[in-house]
Length: 101
Image (tube, rainbow, N blue to C red; front, side, top):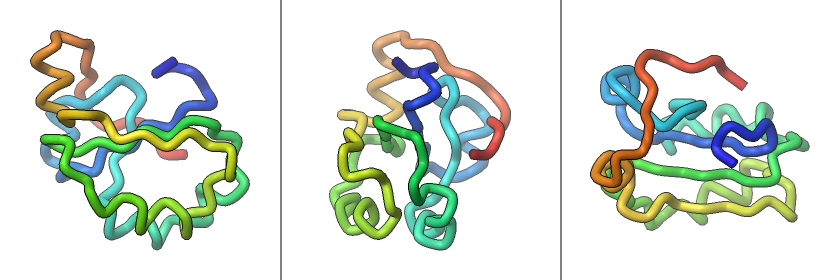
């Protein structure tokens, strides 16, 4: 699912942290800048969107999701425990920057 072309993974950590390692295929956007880039998301083909930060504490995410224009049938998730939980489970990570949308 994570490498599926209909799944968008958004890493909201600092760019420096993202460049060190991140979930495979993730893109780096701070929550504050997501609204500025909302045109990229309008009418996109993504049917699953996964958000994560360092520790899985993105409580105010719902404020950002609606104005971003994701399809109404999109499945929106927050990675429980964030990136640290992903690492603790030993799941794969990538280094460097990923292509933009």
